[in-house]
Image 1 (cartoon, protein in one colour):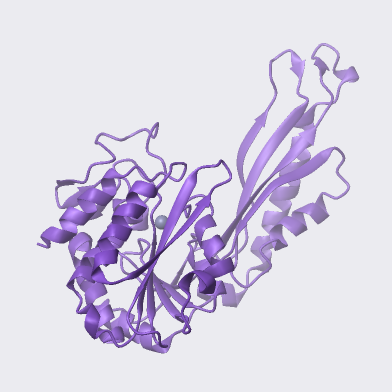
Image 2: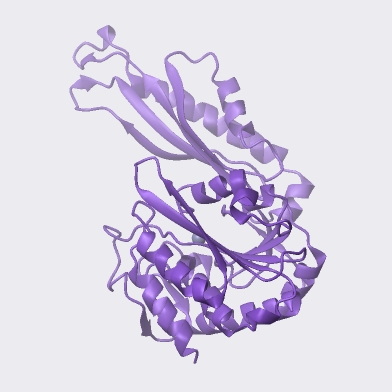
Length: 383
Ligand SMILES: [Zn+2]
């Protein structure tokens, strides 16, 4: 048992780093742990769109040369308050039945804790190549911290040699992921004309307009399915075609009123090598003659095109006894990190099935083994 790993993760879970909150107490803890080890710690502070202060930690150690490695994870978590099903304190690391429970155990503070405890164990003064930690904020609300980094990473890092490879320790059950989809969401507002429901002839029912949109979405989804090709079937065997997901409808005020507006919220997963707006554009084209509709609130997170760094991939396959790389359909900071020309693999402890759930947990095995894996990978690549 690695006591220090347990201690660090016990501390990390206590900080309430739900994305809407300030995270300074947690980033301080991380920075204060890395600073005495000799890391150059940069704090990337910013205010989110609600005016809340956020901080990301970028920490580097070792010579300023090529061949370095980034280990990356996000500090923030999804909410737990008002999530039905919690029977434990979400902010307390609790061990029971070979599982460590708590918000962020699986997704993904434990990986950060594993990086930190490994940093304390490595012979850092003997590093031949640099090690960088990139711990981001606001990943769970659209990878906004990583987006910031993609704009000014070299400025923050202030090194001559920029790292070319990264591991993001999102929960993949130690499967090696080299590509993933992006996500887009937006909504359509349908305008009608309100009035008393006893005189429908005087108004225009927005819900009737919604019906036409739903029909258009269903027809497009059929088309996307027909367009599925062999290449996508190979890369994303789980779901190899686009699909517009109708997620939420909001409209109408009372039984005796004609609904004036209806809002339909949609999302879709974009493939990493296509225009992330492609699906949206097709829907807009298909509905261009529809009257009184308005597209709004578009938000895009890019996918991660296939990464390849032969040395890193070889080490990962040997370390995790895998003979292949895989894809996933969820988005990560990897879309933005890859934009920097950094070959990025998603590979970490925990099962994605347990992420975002009430009573989130990580297995004791993944909790302890993950730290050993990080140590082995660093020892092979950086010393
Ligand atoms: Zn995550």
